[in-house]
Length: 307
Image 1: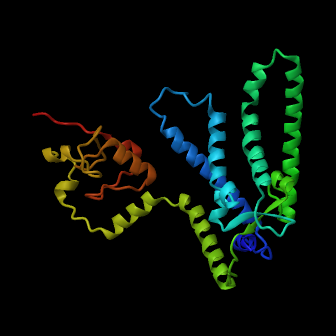
Image 2: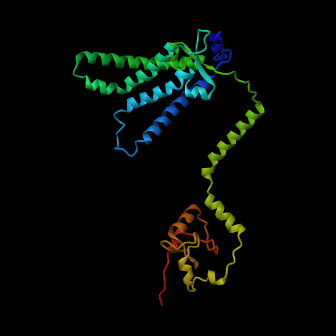
Image 3: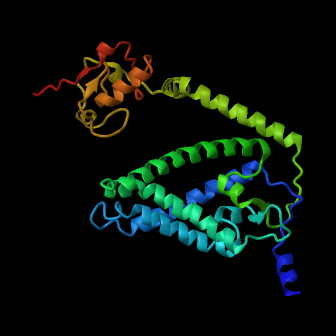
């Protein structure tokens, strides 16, 4: 009776099909969580001698995978990514909706042991290169590794077609991802989808169009036509001597002029301020008196008169 109650509590609704995108998302989440945990662990050694973890990196990855396996597959029969998406592993051809102890251990050997051997194989091959027996073993190992890669590719293509067994070890163990709790049916309105597609297309068109708009020129155009300048005769009289305070302030940025330049009026500009604005907008005018630059040769160094 206790066994039946336990199985009933862990039952998975196998009448609902798990979408391919859910299975792909769960595997991506598992990878991201492993990298996040590894980054947190590596950050603890950031003040140690550089490269202190480089030699033991395969063992570190194996230890982190073992830790994740203990708190995921071994305890809840699902990876951490699957738990976030309401998924769990269950046997394909069994009424018991959980993994057996043998399946969990084989899962650990395949995902932890084989990956460690793959990452450490180069160092082990160098350490045993003087032994002829090991030479043949490593050749066979590399051939098997290539065959496994080809088999994994074929398995993934079959998964995209059938939606079952994303990884080859799932097919070997006979386990699949199921929903741990029944999923509620979501009603998606076509009106909502059409509106989202319309706004998405409109946003892409705007992002395509923005680089072609000269915002400097647009801003200066509105400044010239919407701002009323109070132009006095003293500001336009170039022959008049420039007041001393005009040498201390750029007419564009308001700071002390860097490499001061003038364009024919009494105001002073930074070289970058006036040159960049003129390059962006050839019809640029002085923002204080609306004096036009007209030509790049009119941007000249400021000459001070000492009396």
